[in-house]
Image (tube, rainbow, N blue to C red; front, top):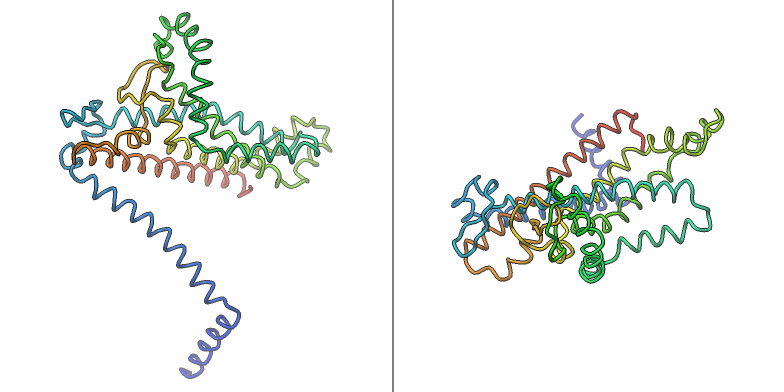
Amino acid sequence: MQHADAVSGWERLRRRTRHGDLLFWLIALSFAVLVVGLLVAIIAVTWDGSAAARHEFGFGFLTSSTWNPVKNQYGALPAIYGTVMSSAIALLIAGPIGVMIGVFLAEVSPSRLRMPLSFLVELLAAIPSVVYGMWGVFVFIPFFRTWIATPISERFGDAIPLLAGPVTVGRGMLVAGIILAIMIVPTIAAVSRDVLSVVPTHQREALIALGATRWEVIRHATIPYARAGIIGGMMLGLGRALGETMAATMVIGNTPRIEGSLFAPATTAASLVASQLPNAGSEMHSSALILVALVLFCITLVANSIARLLVWKVQRGSGGKA
């Protein structure tokens, strides 16, 4: 019996190696382990580099609004607030626009325009963030300050604190949110187009046979079927907005304070680290910035976990479709 088991085991191993299955399995496993190893290495480096700040400030680092390198007083709350608020603004603006672009490309666009427009959308996603930031500084901010921010703050600022002025430089939270929205629209649009394009034809034909209009087919058949993929694309865009560095650094103002107005300068975790880490004047300053980076990593991890949970719940509710 043992001899037969040994022979059968050897035979299985020989069959796997003969066609390269074992070699392919080992290569795939090594790359999977490499990804996990890189994640663990990032956590270990940021955890070790932030030891001094964690020991000095503890959990109060997350709730303190003071950021004064001269006095070695540091708090991450302004960076956390700026990161979450600017990303939320970007997602609120880019989410509906990106999904509608995807619907147009997949369902409405004439066939002769679908390929060129899809190429342009993907090209927008490939533009470096520094180009978006430069366009924001030299083109969008002067226009926004003169024609949008100043009139709105003068008319509604007294009644709505979020729109209060004065608007001086023009760089601020709302500008950063709009620039981030422009940056993540192509990502959301491309993913939405792809998931809508693979919706089975019979989903549409069933409603068309019942006399539904094109809008009703899109609303009641196509979008619900691809809902999980659309949510995944929006969360992918949110992840890019949370971690965006150069564009946010150039347009948000880099002021580590929490202001009540969306027109006031602010900061994000990524822009704070990028702007101050090269010129950190003390070990505590560097440690505090690394701790901010660790906090940003945790925020991104939580956002991705929530996104995965939402996609799972949507897939479960729709029978695992899309």
